[in-house]
Image 1: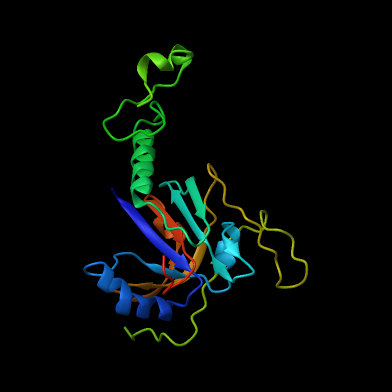
Image 2 (image 1 turned 30 degrees about the horizontal axis):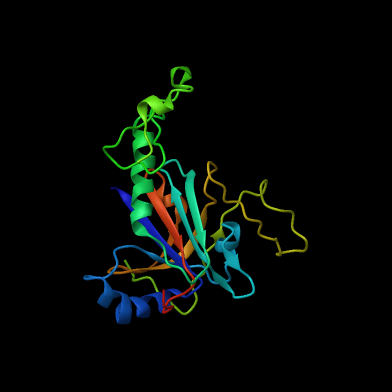
Length: 135
Length: 82
């Protein structure tokens, strides 16, 4: 998909290395293929609105950033619930499709690759029901 | 080329916020960090120290990834359960 992942927490880079060696590399064959960034002090998390000052950690915030450096999506969860990578991938596919059409096509609710898109414009007003159905 | 020494402490700039958009300093060296991340707006740039599996330690800047799709994933901590 041509996407770079950056993981970031308030841990040190040394902690990242040991966690990768003793646990992550045993969960994922070959280890994880992306950089693990250190945000000690939570200054970066604060700017992204995900730093919990009472706990001193960054909560689960996920940002999709396009090739122009624009944030296209964000999702923030409290720590106890993990994320759904399938939905992340679906959103990436949708944003990449919209970008490839330079915005001429947009993706309706629940869109998956291969499903119909919408072409926004005056002719579509009031007629979405003709070209797209709730599944 | 001499090997770069990676000691206990490696400074990284953290948020790289243009002066114009940063909140005014209350006292020297103290600047409250306000959330700046918004959908449809430029992702606030930053520099962080990093561990890159297979490569080692390196400082990483978000703006180095311009031209690529990036998923930036914050998480509470190494060795947590979820």
